[in-house]
Picture 1 (tube, rainbow, N blue to C red):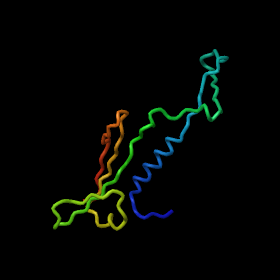
Picture 2: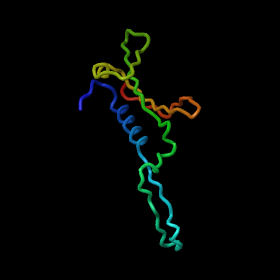
Picture 3: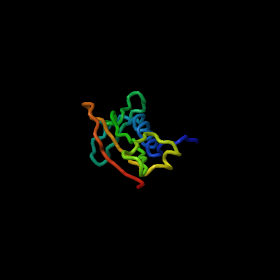
Picture 4: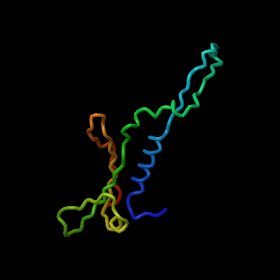
Length: 117
């Protein structure tokens, strides 16, 4: 595994998104022949095509890391997305922003985490 920089947190978040999006749950039904409430048996449909995706995973939250660079001479900071290792070493701080898109297309901030200065 090699990397040219970028946030490990962003990459892990994307990996989780892909894993959840490809997960399918098999259809499970109660066997109609089990009438006794104490000994219920269930049937699982083994046909992959009938398996369902996880509900609500259509628009999962995603993480975007913003690296902040600012020297005493600068009046305004510089914000970098997908910073390289060298840029991260010069950073004053990083902000991890978790965003989610609503069904209407609006993007909301779910969480913020600041690391560093």
